[in-house]
Image 1 (cartoon, rainbow, N blue to C red):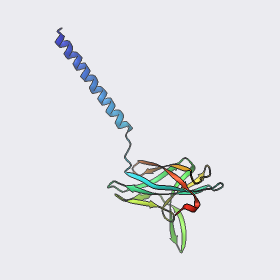
Image 2: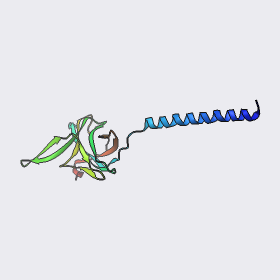
Image 3: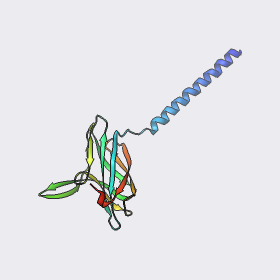
Image 4: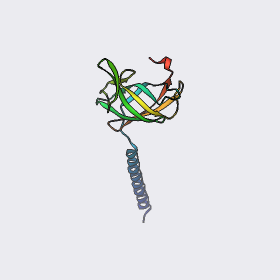
Length: 160
């Protein structure tokens, strides 16, 4: 066999190896991909919950930068047993709080979760939450994407 044939055969093996590695690498990347959230949480904060109080609330602004409306459908934290989506509404002259199944974040818009309106409730606090603490929160959207953020705890007297 000539030297030219040997060089050609080695070049073909090298090309086949590069092609195989590229295909494996592309497959690995797509397997790790998760849906893009397109929703962010800003201005998040948690109401202080002193010792003995097992319930508090989280407020924030959810901003959607996509052209498709998204809904927050659930969430979790490391400081409570459960996180629920809630709203406050005036009925028969009384303010009432009730759970909701989702919170819509309009396409290219925002949903404001604030005292007296939509908000997140934490039930079964595992420890007191005092000003200066922070809470890690993960929200799940209807698309399956997750939005994670850290919310500082505000003192009772500093709330809007």
